[in-house]
Structure formats: C-alpha cells, structure tokens
Length: 382
Image (cartoon, rainbow, N blue to C red; front, side, top):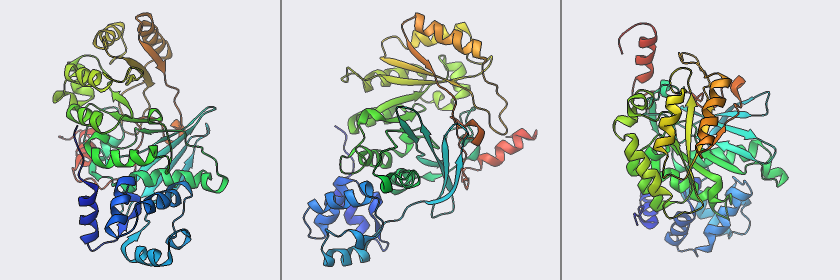
C-alpha cells in the first residue's frame, strides 16, 4: 500500500519553521504527532479535534479541558487561521455561494445546495485550475496554486458557521463533493488529509460514501487514491471517444479513455457496493446524439457505473449551448434501456453563477492562461 509522509516528519518540519502551526492543517494523525512532539498525551488530539471542528471554537483559551500551561504553549506555537468570508450570494432556489479570500489575496468559491433529504457542500481544491476543459469557467481563470489542508477544511468550517450549525447544534451539511475550483487529484495529499477530517467521527463525522472526489482523469492519482482512501469517486467524462474528449478535456491526450476506464474499474474492484459516477455535461450538437449515447454505453461495459447528465451552464465568454430538454431525455432513455443507471442533474444556483462549471473566484493567474483566452476571444492569437 502506498504511504503518505510520516506525520511525525511533517509535524517536526512545521515546528522547526518560523511560522505558527495552523491547527486546521492537521488531521488526527498529525495532531497526535504534534502533541507527542510537545511531550503531551495523544488524547489531546481528540480534545482539539472536537473543539475546532465539532464546536467551532477559534479561541485557544476557550478549550477549557486543556491545561493552562498547555494553552499557553499553544499560543506560542499554534493558531487557528481560516479563509476570510468575503461575500455571500443567495440563489432564488436556496443555493448559497461563498467567496472566500485567502491570505495571499486569491479568492475561491464554495457552494451549498440544500435539498429535502440532504445538504451538499461543493468544495474547491485549487486556486484556479491547471486543466483547460472547454465548458468550465474555472479553466478561464488560469492557475495559481494548490490549497492547503486548512484552506480546504476551512471551507467546511466557514459553511458550518454561516449555516448556524455550531449555534444550533444542527448538521445541515450531509454530503461533501470535491467538485469546485481545481483538479483534486493534482493536490492529492492535502485533499486526502482534509477528507480524513470530513470523515473523522471527532470532526465532521461523514460517511465515506457521502464524500465524493471528482477528477478529470489523472489516472496514476486515481490508483494512489485507491490506496489512501475509500471515498466515492466521480469522473468528469463528457465524451465517449478520444477525438472528442481530447477537445473537451485536454487531459485526455495524456490519459485516454481506455486507461481511464481501466483505472475506474480498479478503483471499485474490491468494493462490491460502490459505483463510479461519470459526469457528462450535455452540449448541443457536440456530445448529445444517439451515436454518442451508444459510444458511452460501450465504454461503460464492465464498470459499475452511474451517469450524471449535466445540462450545460453558460458563463461569460462561453460559446457552447445546452442540449435541448428533449435531447437530454432521449440520451438518458437510451442509457437506461441499455441497463446503465442514469439521472439528469437539476441545475441549481444558476442565477448566482453557482451551478456546475460556473465557479470562477478571483485568481492571480500564474499560467497567464486568462490573458491568452481574452486574446483568443478578441480574435488574437493564443
């Protein structure tokens, strides 16, 4: 089994640095190592987990079951630093989008989607995205950097605060999807550590089936994720032949569909009740014909699968159009007739640009991709 860096080594390096350790950066294993390095008993980690994640406490002195001397040491060595809540946008359908400002001035977006039987929180994993999927607003922003564990789990903490979970003792967030800005598998170690906290009974206590990671298809990282975690996997597919997917999801040129399907089968090979969710954005005249449906049915053979058909959500500068309701229904019916589980995802938060593919944030683009896109849209050279 593939291993992450030893928590003791990680904590030792952070303690030796000049900056304080952000306690939000530490999952249970790292907190155990942190308190052991201080000469404290490992059970201190459990106490701090509850204070930080279950009770929403930010003041170290409010952690009253920690000894006074320990709290004093924590003040010199550690802190609790969250992303700043910059803006909140509420949709007419109940969806909420938060713009969170990071220490370096970049901003990311987080979305909460309430339903009758669940509340789904969509998290970002990177500032922007290094991939260049043609139907996604985040791709136009370029890429700056990976998010830290604290910046990922801080989105969960901020959502709980905004939704009144700590004050009321309620649990509005029942599901978490890593489907916001960025490619989670290109920030694998930090994402896995954050998901550890999401599923830790002493933190947010979610079932691993209620935490989903979505990837455009970084095949080696899918295999590594299989060794490190057993959360649900979603694949951002959108095309069933390599020529078309090369255009829609350029990552396909490196990891083509046959390799992606093989990795998907491996991910659920020893998990008999688990399916891979395949996301398929419906683009008018691009990937929505009966021939495309037949191709999709073919490549999904042998993969325990569920297909989410996603009506395309336009964003400023996009040139594609959503498939008609009739085309989406016909596509879905063809999948169902072939025995492929398929649902059409209801668009939520479109009026505040919080729907799938619309998250943009405010990214200081290190790749300069946004400038190249603007030139292209103006008729210049890319």
